[in-house]
Length: 266
Image 1 (cartoon, rainbow, N blue to C red):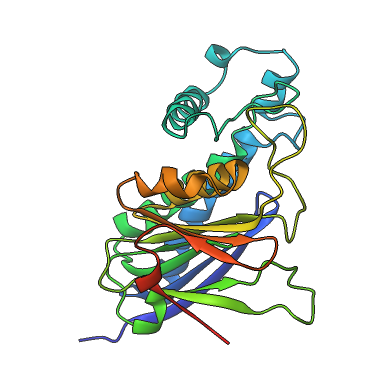
Image 2 (cartoon, one colour):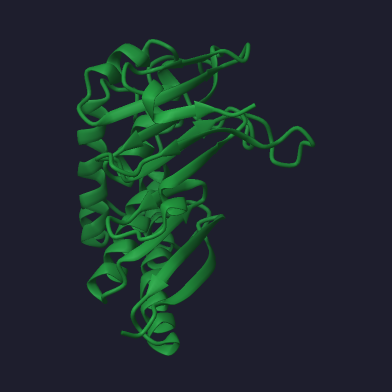
């Protein structure tokens, strides 16, 4: 039996970096073609949903030049997804900015990443991980134990000499396949308060959410960070979602089942 080919592909898109890494049963040329097909999904999503591209459908929508019905059908799909997530999070995830602009960036990055991962699976690449700008997805068929371990960075900029790993989640043997983190360390308070005028909560500096899929982890990380420590109780009622909260004073809090899943590193 031919040994699988190891691969790593780094793709810049959506203002961040996506890293595909794993082992492929395909030859190098075919593996590269499959990866290119996958990253094309990322770039297509960026072309549609970026508010930084003046020609994008979403920018046209923001300027009032088009309605949702005039745009590619996927815009309506994402609009509906955002509405469902707003209901599920009791309004703590919201795709409209304080300026009333539709901005689904809190969902689109990981939605597109999940679609890219689906392309790899459809083409026979099953033993892989995907890092979508720090949000991590693990495929079911991982063969190396180390790939099941996801490090969570300290809530400080990676440029700091004190940067490093806060803790590690070992997801092997669990139902969880994704981890997403929201916080203020790298980009400041970029998450707006969806319920009130004014600044975001100041209790937390970081929230990491574990879930079965990447979009769920990403949305709840955003919503929990926006809500603050009260989100612990809310997430305890959510099935198959766990979270680690880092408070501004350095303390840690988490959902009921989070403690067995991580070991604090010195």
